[in-house]
Length: 157
Image 1: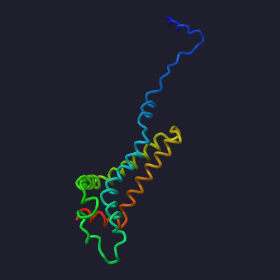
Image 2: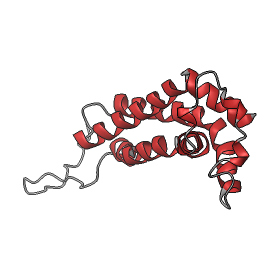
Image 3: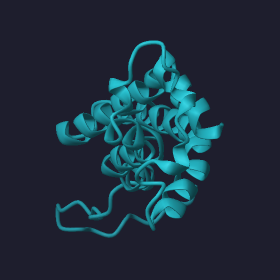
Image 4: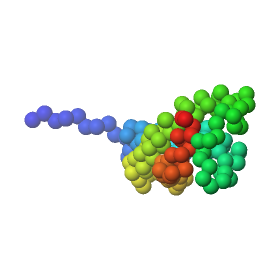
C-alpha cells in the first residue's frame, strides 16, 4: 500500500485568507439602503411638483364648496404659466405614470433586502430600508385617496 506524502509543516499556524467568502461579499455590495430611500423620495417629486404644488400655491385647496377643480385651467396657473412651465409639465407627464411602479419596486426591493440580510445588516441600514419602504407604501396609499384621483384627472384633462 502506497503512502501519501505528508502535508508540508506550517509550524503550528493555520493558513487563512483575508477575503470574505464570495457570497457575503456579493451580498454586502448589493445593499444600498440610502439609494432605496433616495429613489422612494425622488419618485414622489413629479406628483408633488406637477400637481400638488399648483394646487396649493394657487390657493385651490381653499376653493368654495361646490366649485369643481376642473373649472381651473392648469396652464394658466403658477408654475405652468412661467418659463419653467414646459419643464414642470414634462416632469409631470413622464414621471406620474411611472410613480406607482417605481414606488412598488422600492417597497419590494427594501423588504426583500431586509429579509435576505436579516441579522447581518447594521441598524442604520435597517432603518434606511424601513424608511424607504414606509415612504413607498405611504405614496401608494396616497394614490388611493379621492383627492389624489381628482388631482390626477385635473392634470390629464
